[in-house]
Amino acid sequence: MDQDPVPGLRSELNADVPLARPGEFAPLNIGPLTIDPPIVLAPMAGITNAPFRTLCRRFSQDRCLYVSEMITARAFVEGHARTLQLASFGPDETTRRSIQLYGTNPETLGQATRLLVEEWGVHHIDMNFGCPVRKVTGAGGGAAIPARPRLLQRIVRSVVKNAGAVPVTIKFRKGIDDALLTFLDAGRIGEEEGVRAVALHARTAAQLYSGAADWNAITELKQHVRTIPVLGNGDVFECWDALRMLRQTGCDGVVVGRGCLGRPWLFGELCAVLTGQAPPPPPDLGTVLDTMREHARLLVAFFGERGAMLQLRKFTGWYLKGFPGMKRRLPALHLVSTMAEFEALLADLPRELPYPMAALRARRCKDGRSQVVALPDGFLSARDEDLRIDDPEHVDGG
Image (tube, rainbow, N blue to C red; front, side, top):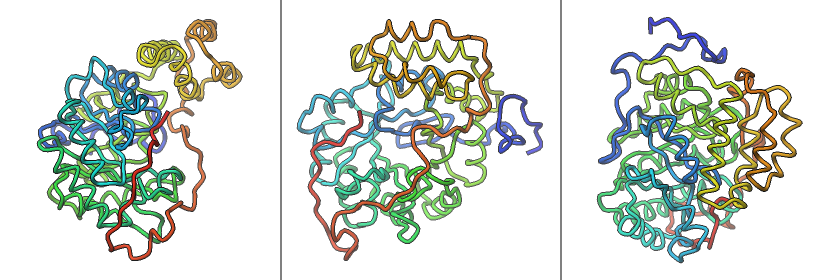
């Protein structure tokens, strides 16, 4: 680590982090897929639809793995129109089509997997065992499932079997709360049942997105899971964070979630620093506005104007976070209903404002609260016994 740090916009936390040395980080191999550098866009409900994936792909020249938002297996099998739309891929997604699948019933998940592989041509399936949202865990799904190891095993076995040659990965949290940690069991089961990589969001379900991610848990999982890649997730807000995570934990790849909200150019920065190059300079407000416009156009093409504007509203605050004078603009942007209105609201904004330091690590999307995790009655009793849960009809993001 004898390189001089690259100057530029970075937080004090990352002031002394050097660029990657030649060959320091190996490509990430997930079955037949090679991701170089080893960066993955985290599946996020209501966020990582095809338009957003396209935007991230453009900034990184299609070098990373870009996972869809969570799709409910039952709704997909039953052909719900909204689910089918969210499961669809953009015209630029011809390789590394990646989708995250959610469910609690092994048979339904197996059906969905066959459809995705045989009719939808997916190249990668990720499984959601980390969602902490009350309506998901309260139905026994998401982050609740690893607390029932035999259920987790049956689900993973069904999906891996029905996926055939298509690689399956699983993503999970540390556990329900600090008193019930499940991540080592989840990693072991995934490895034994044939998944091609495991990813850990280094928080418990009770934490939601509060506090600091426990990167030491990623290190522990990497020491525990030896035959497949281990990916780390949590608190990657700057490209330099990914370097620190890889070096500190020894993990094989980095999953990027909230840090890219309103900052899709983060993937270009990540690709640069992980290959030993200085990252591009941060965008000024004018470049951010141009990115917002392109995002809006992609959303309109995918959802139609009305649906696109509903999607766009939540992104406006993330794009403009930290820029002086923008807070007073947000109420109108959060009510925008047409592209013409959107363009008019952006027209008089000053383009030359530099990217604000405060926006680098600003909280996005989630607040700082924690929770008592909702679980079905009796879910934690006799945890080693088998259990059958019927899938909820529809819990996909909007």
